[in-house]
Amino acid sequence: MNPKPPTYTLTPKPLPSPYTQDDRFDGMYMNLAQQCRGIDPLLDSVFGFLRRKTDFFTGPPGSDDGGEMAMKKVMEVMEKHRGIVKKEKGEKVRGGTDGEERSDDRSLL
Image 1: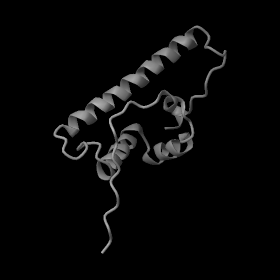
Image 2 (image 1 turned 90 degrees about the vertical axis):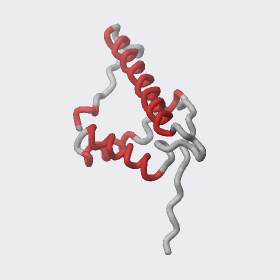
Image 3 (image 1 turned 180 degrees about the vertical axis):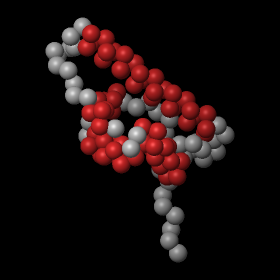
Image 4 (image 1 turned 120 degrees about the horizontal axis):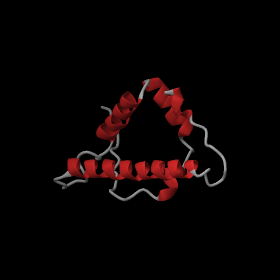
């Protein structure tokens, strides 16, 4: 009989800001995005993983509002990244902080 694979607990802590610029996994994410062939299937894949392999949607043991916590976390991260995009757009309009444009690989999706 095969043992059940472990379920990983995601604690509701804010992500440290270095992760917003961490590009270590960009190649893996780009490969995944290309294989999924779009943003919607990519997000379905990510949330499917969270549903199957973590307690993201149910919350920690004994929690009654896991779904609410998940929604708050998604909105928190979404708002953080929207703010980053707005800030980057403002810097580009003014010429950027370092004078360079970043490459935009998003067109590969």
